[in-house]
Image (cartoon, helix red, strand yellow):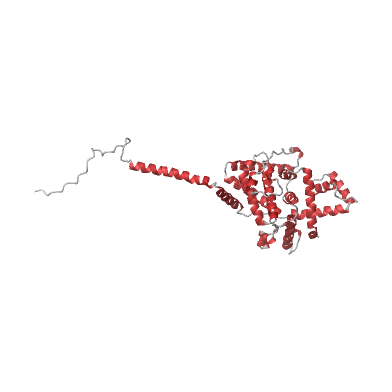
Length: 139
Length: 245
């Protein structure tokens, strides 16, 4: 009795289990199975095993999977010293704010000066408002 | 990939990231007229997925974190499932799947966009997984998945519903218990196989990948792959036979 361990038997069974066997291959396999109860048992066992394996449920990653990955990436960046790059972004923003603040203070201090830096004087045409004279009764 | 081929050495995450393989150009799919309707539909779906992946990778290379999030969400279940079936322990599998995406994030420059992102991701995942198996073997780690660790086991049967295929194979009120017991046995025996055999069974029979994709991922020749897969199936059948009677 032929033992089903030849390359041909193996290829036929694999193709059959993968549903890739054409009509000619199927008749060859049937002939082989008719000749070998051992081959029949082997094929039947493989089919049962595959039913169990293919029946394993599809597993789902935990819902917070991405958050954990992102956290690990951040932590490793930090440990590797990449945090300096991350810190440079707030510093750029702080730099802009400091420059703006200095500009505002400078403008406030020089508000009374003209473009050439001279102190601006009051407009002489503008008279100070005099307090009204006290009303004296008519003699 | 010559830097991570030493079968005895356990590599660090940095070495794995630095040695992430470049992708290779893939042959054009067969002309449409030779394909069935289902194959055409599958090819169209794959082409659309590949186009989307390439866009996301391009954005990721430009530093777009949202693109990375989308890639993780797209593949997290498959990579987690691969790791769980390979390692057999939920916590270890989650940790390992996270490691894969961290390596992808850091080594995305090695992916040139010539092959499918999907197969490149799986190559990274299988290298990382084999490396961890070596490490765990060195530490005598052989905790397999405990059934009580599964989320389904933490919920009443009414909430979980008949989601486990094993349950439907065993009708009656004991279906849930028996189904879960068989699932645990299959997982345990799968995890006891040689890692190369285990990988082929997980890719082909658990995750339902095509031979072409497995060839891309493992680098095996078609004949070698089919022959090795057959031996892997026979080995698993022998281990499961006492439980199938």
